[in-house]
Amino acid sequence: MKVLDLCCREGGAGEGYRQAGASVVVGVDTKRIRNYPGTLFIQADVLGLGLDFIRQFDLAHASPGCQFGTELNSDKSKHANLIPPIRALLQKAGVSYVLENVRAVARAGHLRNPVSLFGTMFDCHMVTSTGQRFDLSRERCFETNWPLIPPWNPGASHPIANVFGGHLRARSGPYRTGGDTGRTRDFIGEDKPALARRLMGMPWATMDGMSEAVPPAFTREIGDQFLAHMAQRRAA
Image 1 (cartoon, rainbow, N blue to C red):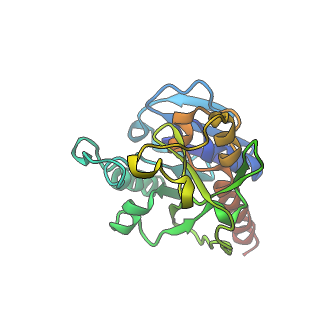
Image 2 (spheres, one colour; image 1 turned 90 degrees about the vertical axis):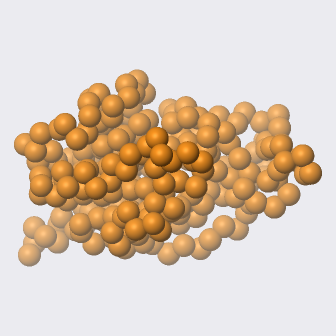
């Protein structure tokens, strides 16, 4: 399996495909990424890639920026929706693809028949120095042009934590805010980057990188299903 990881940032998605058995994982992003964990990183405009280049890969994964539609961004006017042109490019190339984005973008209809994956499907979690466990929920939505089936989701059995905006945040119960002040009091005295890396399964990544990342556990599952899909297609 050769995977093209578009809009890759720090390679959370690409690492998952590598864990699923991809022999080649090539990341492409307009921003220079120095800690990309895949086979090769290329700094380029995704929409400028040639069709022959894209056709070298069995699967193209794309995670266009969510800033045009996420509820966390109050000024969406400055950001373009790159999903339609990237979809058109991959369809023209004729490759199997995965398009990923956040819940608000999917609910607005920008993804076609998306499948939602959650960290609770894959036991993504962290444990603080005091022994308190936090689960990762982090819904991400995936459009594919091949069959993708979500695994069973048992839900969270512990308080929720997430990484966004360059910060590690507790997202449930008494851990959420600093009482009446509204200021965060999350994980005082803890090594937050280390905890975030365990939560996300990305030991090489920065806080900013994890804020935008797809956890590798998600794309490891997608990669496993795609390999099974390829095998069935070859056997047919």
